[in-house]
Length: 130
Image 1 (spheres, helix red, strand yellow):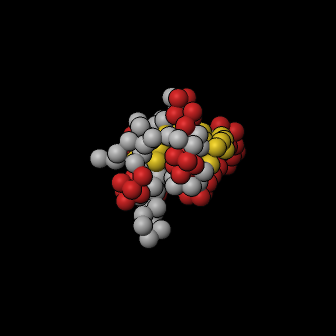
Image 2 (cartoon, helix red, strand yellow; image 1 turned 90 degrees about the horizontal axis):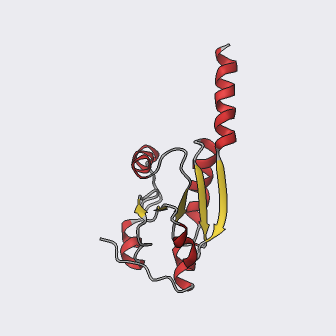
């Protein structure tokens, strides 16, 4: 009976998981969807950030990560059933992280393909990271 219940709970989580892939554009900012910037502090300082975005580093400069720390910070920014977007420099890291969050943890994630660089290339003016 426990196995059946756990299986049903797991399937329910899988059905709620949602991953959307969209190109990173300046107009996306107007959608009022929370944006989580998973780049490093050095990258935030170099290019600036999307105004109103949440800066929560996933991979450090050496490529290491601390999932527990990231999820703790993420839970302070978004609720489990809230749709949100992930952005990085060009979309490589967010591709991996968004699949993990959606497929394994049931989050509703939008992966901003092309990252901050595409958005800036299309004329978006970032704000300074403080």
